[in-house]
Image (tube, rainbow, N blue to C red; front, side, top):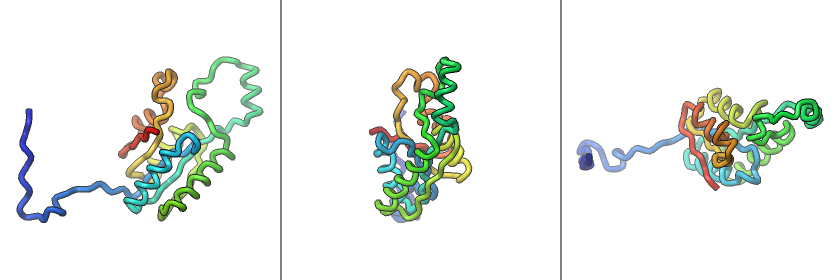
Length: 171
C-alpha cells in the first residue's frame, strides 16, 4: 500500500515543519578504547551536535586476577561471562579518563566518566536508567560470535533493557 506524502501545512513555515531529534544526555560504553574508537568518535560527534552531556561508562569485574586464578584452579568449568571482556577497576578508571580526555579535545562541552562494578552491559544500562539518558551509544563487538548469539553481546543486552534510543556503531 502506497500513500502519497502529505502536503505541507500552510500555517507553518518550511523550517518549522521539519522535526529534529535532540538529545540532552548521551551514554557511551567505552570499555576497550583501542577496539572501540568508532564508539567514542560517534559519541563525541553526537554530543557536540546536540550540545548534550556525555557520560562515558565502563564496567569492571570486582574479582581480582589472583582470585580468578584460584577460582579457575578450583573449578575449571567455563564461566559464562568470558563472552564479555572484563576490565579491572584500574583499567575501567583509565578507560573513562582517556575517553573523557578525548571528548574534551573534540569539543564536547560536558563529558563525565562513570565507573560501575559489573559487566559492561549492566553498567551501561544502570547509568542510562539512573541518568534518564536520551541516547545510548555502544559498539557491535561480539554480535557475530557464537557466545554473543547465545548469551547476548553488550549491544544486544543494552537494546533489550534500555528505555531510550540506542545507537549501535559498527567499525
